[in-house]
Amino acid sequence: MSGSKNTNALVARGLAKGFKVGRGRVEVLKTVDFTARHGDVTMVMGPSGSGKSTLIATLSGLLRPDSGEVQALGQALWTLPSGKIDRFRLDHCGFIFQGFNLFAALTALEQVTTVLKYKGLSPAEAREKARAALTEVGLEARMNQRPSELSGGEKQRVAIARALAKDPQLLFADEPTSALDGENGQIVIRLLRRAATEHGAAVICVTHDPRLEAFADRVIHIEDGKILDDIQKSAAPSHAPFGA
Image 1 (tube, rainbow, N blue to C red):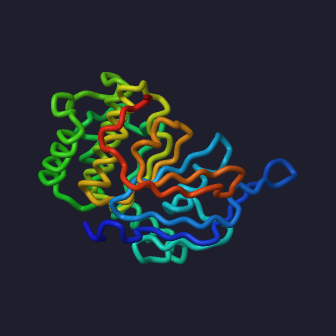
Image 2: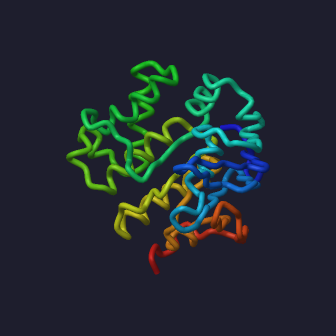
């Protein structure tokens, strides 16, 4: 994985995004500046409707901002053609969502191998790498189970394995613990912590769950489309008590 710890993986300047609502318009992001570093977990926190999910979408190439720029791994993301933005996400980004986004008919192993085949790996290479990723998240005994046979925490771990198997330099998580109890939430956030510490990814996690703050290197609070404060923590404990 390219990118040294504490170097910027992503820099955004002046991001603005609004949406039409009825006859009016709501400005969801208001000229936001943002950076994220390799090896760091950055938490973006705020209440529902604060703009945090819109921010992560504009940073990751999922939603074009009305204005502003995003430099992702040295590339001006929103100057690229849409096909190249799609390829950038496939090659460099991992995504973990609140709703897991798993395919009902696929086993845990197949969920992970499918995305690796899109990256161009052979079936044997994809299978080997998928097995390693599922083992890393503690699902070596559940690889052949489909989502209906997995708990919520296990489903989220499959989603994390799918993201980590790509060796992403940018890992985006949108409310990854909101559907989980405290024990499973702790497992998930420790895996995100490991993605930064051991894999060198820039992990950007949006949440309104205050239990996650203890695991972050940096905490950004956003409200009404503006960043209120940006707190750089000296060190994030890898085994902080979730929900203490």
